[in-house]
Image (spheres, rainbow, N blue to C red):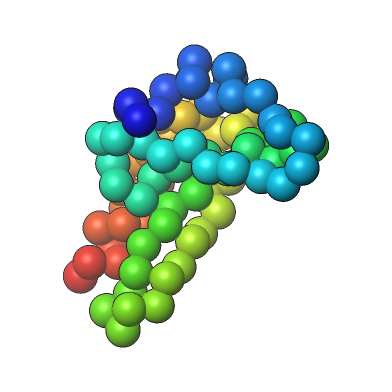
Length: 82
């Protein structure tokens, strides 16, 4: 696992069935979901204080850059730990 970059997201090839995640090593809870259709969506994954798991879609790769998605993920994840 390494820092999630545009190059890594662009190189991710879809699998025939299902989707999979690529997680960032620098920002825990930030990743990209690669769908079998080729669509790629940035996500923020965290647990609430009650222990419930939340996974929010930040936006789609293409209209949203990896750096912009990371900035939004930082805000979401920082808000989750307050």
